[in-house]
Image (cartoon, rainbow, N blue to C red):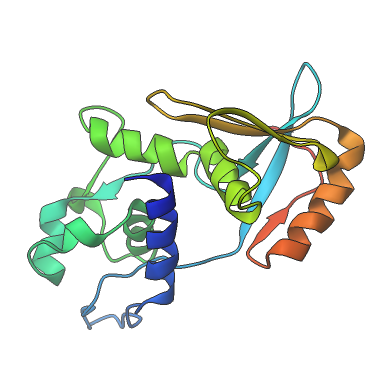
Length: 195
């Protein structure tokens, strides 16, 4: 799935129907979809100077729900329409556990590739900022937004390698305020921290 299609699909799903909360006895009629939520980007100091930006997403791949468990609960083929964050939302809500879950660390190359391409903290930061600065970040390899000290890098490899760096510490405040002016859904934590 191309990144632009993925981002459009994610926003469309976020705007779509969400499931009714569960009572202790009621079964959901629709899968829970995570939807749009506020995202925080952090600055990790680099030994050679500057900062790598990364998202508040999970540092390691999270477990997913077995397709047959999803289809048994919501109908055949439902698992084809869910993104990995939808799995995590239903797991976090307590809808699935134990034998219904599986790890994607080994033996699930496609799921691991999807996680690495779209949900790894560095790639998420890249995609979120690329979307905010639509039209200013395009192509592979290197793109800069000099007035903000941002350097975007994307390499045509698998797993996907996409990163964004803030080159100068004195531009943290300007980056924070610029992003705040562009979106209420993305914020930059101005305090550098290690991942």
